[in-house]
Amino acid sequence: MKRTQLSKTSKLAALLAGAALFGVVSQSALAAGTASGTSISNTATLSYAVGAVTQTPITSAAAAFVVDNKVNLTVLELSGSATTVIPDPTLGTVTTTTFSVTNNGNTTQDFNLAVANLANGTANPFGGPLLDNYNGTSCSVTNVVVIGAGSMGAYTPGDQHINALTADSGATVTVSCTTPAAQANNSLAVISLTATARANDAANTLGAALTNDTGVDVPGTVQIVFADAAGSDDAALSGSHSARDAYLVQTAVLSVSKVATVICDPANGSTNPKNIPGAYVQYAITISNSGAAAATLSQVSDTLQGQLTFDTALISGAGVATNCAAGVGSLSATGFGALRGTGATTYAAPGLATQNVTAGASVAGQVVTVNFGTLAGTAYGAANASLAAGDFVTVYFNAFVQ
Amino acid sequence: MRIARLMFTTMLLTLLSGYSLAVQAADDIKVTSIAEIEIVTVGKDGKKTFKRTPPGKAIPGTEVIFTNIFENVGKKAASNIVIDNPIPENTFFKADSAMGKDTVITFSADGGKTLGLPEKIKLKGSDGKLRIAQPNEYTHIRWTYKGQLAPGKSSEVSFRAVIK
Image (cartoon, rainbow over all chains, first blue to last red; front, side):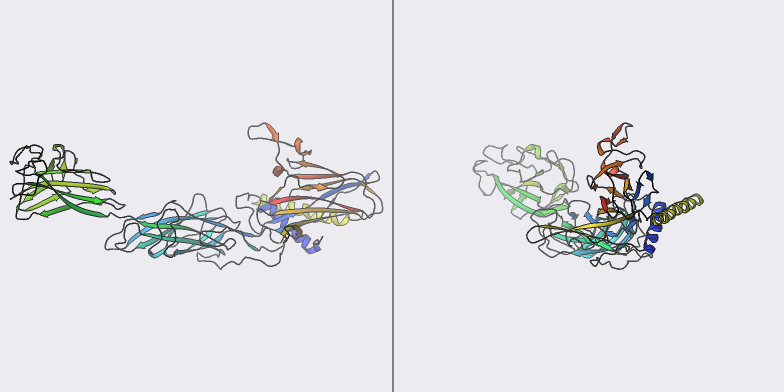
């Protein structure tokens, strides 16, 4: 068994260090542990007797050593889900996301912060089938704020580091990335934030790099010991920790369809009607949003061919038996019907009286115009230009074949 | 501030006098306290090897082994040997780690005022009622050596503590 014998000088030094310990550092009982540089000192006192005579007790020299610098940190993504980006069609869109960086070591440190775009094909860190397929631009740290009762040095805009984060303190790090213009719906960009512990320099600048001391043990010297776990993009015991976040582009995907259905002809009435002169054809214009974000609709216009005449009375065909005389069985005073809903279109020709439009649709000559800002109807409801993801809106009208 | 400085100086003096006492009384019994850490290496055959080294790299959570070696360097047998060891500041006692051949080991959780076997050490809980103290709340350990230590003989006692 190998033992260290302390010299007289070091005994004295150990005692002095022990005295300093009692006076100054006894208050530290934090989760991060005893502060580095603190001396741990042990002394034993032995009392005994020789014969029947009790002797003066003997106190051993202190067995002392200093607590080393434990470097440990945690980086966490704070939202727990991908950050939604609704891209501007012409301009890049700047979106922020937040991480936390916590100093779990026993020493105040600076922390370098590095934001990285991960390669195409990287999985979404929050699960699901989508893979990374684009890179944000100008990804950088734009703000650092200390959490709760923690303590850190000042953050200057532009700094890509945390200054003087004390043991047990955490900071919220805001990262900002620009999503390129007109990025398609469900595009995914995975990023990582890696924080690396650095020496705490006195200035509000990034301190020097730390090296894990793998050399021989020196009881009286504060050595640097990396004790961090592996993060998403760094190895264990690297002095770094990392976490991932993702930007998910969510935009509306609109499609317009127009379906024509013959609802009545003068020969067959409404039973198996044919496209012959004198027949009524119902045109249904459906706008669907298969994207992931709501769209605000403006207007749709449709120019009828010269052979067609707009039917202002919106005959459904159900109201007439064997002929299609105008003005019989009118469904709508405006000549339009409309409905909206979720999922697959539920509209089926001919329309229903309850689907009459009361405002927002009009005809001028051969041009039919639907203004979604004002469109309202019994089944459709009040004017609402917003079309939620997965929803559809159908506007229909009849035309008479000349 | 002045009071703090005074206290500091007093403490320093106490410690220094303790130091000189240890040198003076070294005629009959010599006591040495050492601190070590245990490094466990697992060999290819899965066998664990325990190696003790000075605690060079000690960070919060490190377990330290403190050993007190006492040797009778006098000419007569020593009796009634009692070794008192406060748990070092910034560490806590590791349960069941106190050892010592031919000794009775008792503990204190109140700064050494009362000592007893583990199941008899009580502390006042937050509800004001007495409860059994946890090993990590111990403040002192006492080894009472059974019998006499003949001249030239030595023995040792030890415990483990974890850095807070």
